[in-house]
Image (cartoon, rainbow, N blue to C red; front, side, top):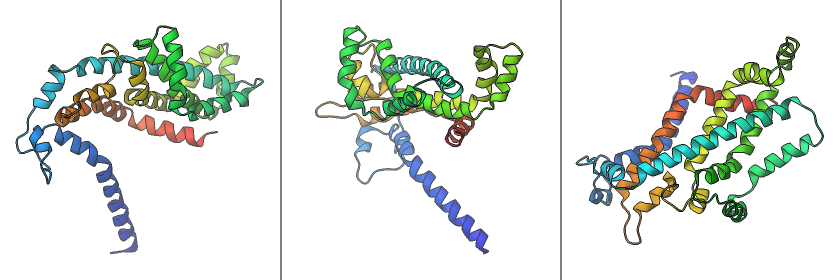
Length: 276
């Protein structure tokens, strides 16, 4: 075996090990969702269900509020992502293309906003949402999630827009295009990987968020899936089969979104990290 072959073998081995470690929790979750409750507590654990059952999924879909929580998560995540995308595109384009007083300070404050711990803003945000009557509402959670996703979304797109040649936009302006027309017809199509990266990041962040949903959505009409998973746990008992089935249901939209946009998402992240 040549030195190159040995090196490739080591690389393949490390990649296989990394994939195994990364995928094991998801595979275990999927397998456990088909086990009966007594089999989940067996020691040593069984890797393959002795008798696969759909009862956990039937319990989750027909006898719990998970379908409602799924809809809530979908509406809130989609709404927050859409608003964050529009605001991030407009703000980042302005930062990337225009010069104005306080520009550097504004960008620094955006970065600081991303670094603030969630616990530091829960109480003031709760007071504001309560004063505006937005607790236990879709709009309240959507606005709260903008605090989490908007700063990094703006920062990512600033780096991406700066990498697009200004000459292309100047040529369009000479031909009579407006700034908004240039943004929509030239800059955004060329920035598609960056936009996709922002969409995936914002949607996944809001879909999996727990603390804000726990504090600002106390009614079943607005609770999201991460909060709904806790309803399968009582003081003396946890239905782990139902938890695993609900977790699989919660993971499917994220997996579909990432697989559908994987190439553009990775391209957007790498481009945003290297362009300046």
